[in-house]
Image 1 (cartoon, rainbow, N blue to C red):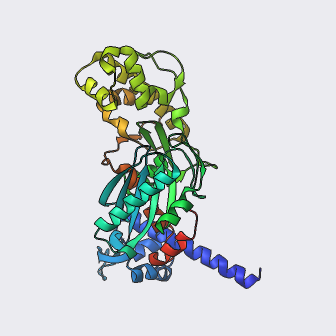
Image 2: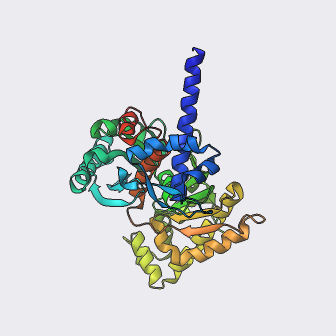
Image 3: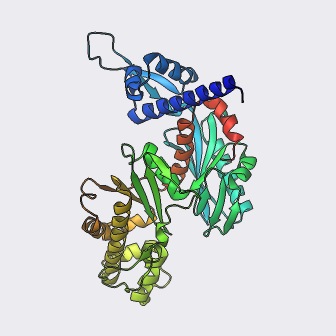
Length: 409
């Protein structure tokens, strides 16, 4: 490669990196002056002006208001991201339905649509996703040219960069190039991600994780999942399978009603595991019962079910303590459908967690329950696409639609 060409490529990479850093800083602060950007990123004021100019011209970055001056000089102009500049779709794929949300770049929901799936075949899921997206396109008061892409979250091991679902037991999929197939159907750029990782990415950019460099998202419901954020980035592992905490081993600690058998964490505290254990404890009251029915029994004061939730709380607390001792996060976000039972186990979880964290790792640790609405999973997937566009928007977003569409993920 000629030296001049290599040098130009190097300069372009540096510029792209700096533009991404500028957008990230504006997003993180909400509003910030060019001079404060220059100071934080250690760039010259002239460089900041040159880097932000394309975004201001595009309309992605706006001059929001005047800041406070520390001297008698002119007040600085504050920059902000116009999150309504473009819109994305987020989709959560389940074995009985897909939930799709249309959101702006701030993952604020415009509208939601749920489409049932008759089967978990790839063809049926693509049909359902397409139907949901078209319904949102028709119902949303958003110009088509502002709809830039689709983020999809799925259960299982996902090769994020390749756009391939390597293995999803719930869907019974193996090595499915889902991003490419869906992009062909929709004519839009598609990113796919493990569902818990998508939730973690959205929490990092738009949710409880803002302000935390290293945090964990633990979801409880049909399964038990883990999203890992380290230095502001989702950690997926080299093959996309990191975070399968539900398949780690669990031995109940001083159980009230649980057996002392060692099995997986998911088998102990996931919805199906809790139901199976409850049926063994009170078979006459749990025949045909679903997860919500078990919650209702606890609310009605069923002693065996309350004891079961206390045991589950201790199992979760030990698992969280292990995670804290490995990752030393400053925040754990607990989410998922299983958090409907938080009133019956969360206190015990916190006590157990604090007991088994090493040294002072638990002293400044926040443990918070995710209170996003039922569309949180789809919003997380939309947030994933929005975060990618913002993080990598080194070109105007209308051009990003074309360029991202030519990639596999």
